[in-house]
Image (cartoon, rainbow, N blue to C red; front, side, top):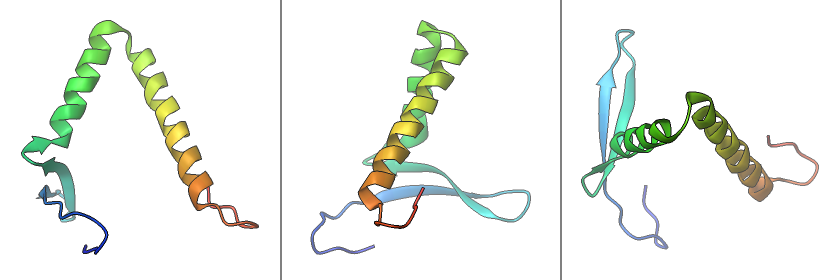
Amino acid sequence: MRSDSMLNVYLDLLVKRGLDGQWRTVDVRFQGIAYVAIKKYMYRTALQSGPVAALIDTLREKNVQFFSELCARHAVEGEKLC
């Protein structure tokens, strides 16, 4: 994707074909940092300091917040986006 208003950003995608023959992106790297590795570290740290239920609640809250903000930004009057 190209944009005159954005800086050049280079991403490495790790793409694998599943048993069903479909290609899927399984990881994204930016400047050598793997997204999956960051998430694994964050989840491991959260699980060391609390129960699985607390991590699930935190993720659920983040999803609600993210989609609420997304829907509010892209709301068109008279139409329900989310």
